[in-house]
Image (tube, rainbow, N blue to C red; front, side, top):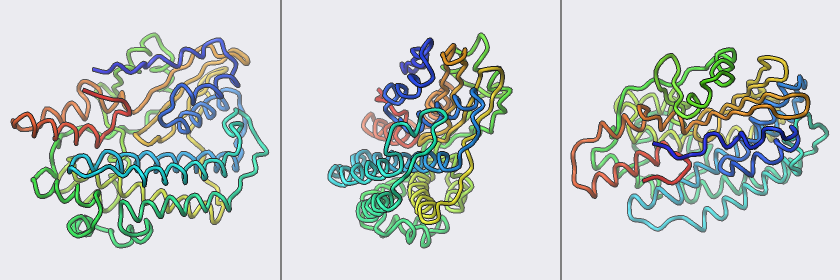
Length: 365
């Protein structure tokens, strides 16, 4: 069961679009950038604002950087606890400084998320310096190599397993511990990956009379589904190889976060070096004054639907990945049900590993 305030977005009903876009990130402080981007994209779809490639580029880059930050947070502050090691607080402090520098360089003003904004001038040199620092922290504290070099050396499941057995970082030691204990497939279960839901169907689900129920316990085609870093990276060769052996168990899940944190830093570097265009966030107007946007946040798919009457919000709905993944019959519930009987200490540790691997973004019991 979840006590997350899934209807908190209704606080913006009656407010202007500008007030909503400015206030929403403060209400949802975890993944605030992804929330801000989804809000802006939904508002702009409702308003009929044309795409601005530079704004899309900056927002998308910041979502990638935020996802890296969230993965590093878990790797440095949560993962070491599972193997009895000190948390990497100093490294995380450096990562936060680097992230804040990158964020300030790309979106020097909160106006970046104001619907219809134009004329933002990023400081790409400062952004590269922030990314360099982020990569250095990742290399020193997590991978033992620069993200690009690590990816080049870990192209298969066997490569990843060999790295975990030999590298001298807490992340590698955690994966080594999972393998040594026979927990690589722990929590394995059969649940499907969330397929893209057409905007017309999202409109029916989020704009109808059963929207509150759907947002609280979402299902698609009469079944729950998973949307997570693991499902998002399931096509990667390393994750495909691990999944063939361990399903959607712990080892593939933790490996997916390592792969994604590295790959996103490489993608950020490529876009910063070339300022190449990126695809806009999927968004559509599904009726007069109605906009829906989809953004891949750190923990999975985030959907915003806004309905406006002129410049005022008439209705606002947010569908977050936590409600998919922690559905009463969802991937975590099924993973917990798959655990074998064990003593309390072992079960507590296994549950912590499984819940952290999927990550509800809030505290849990």
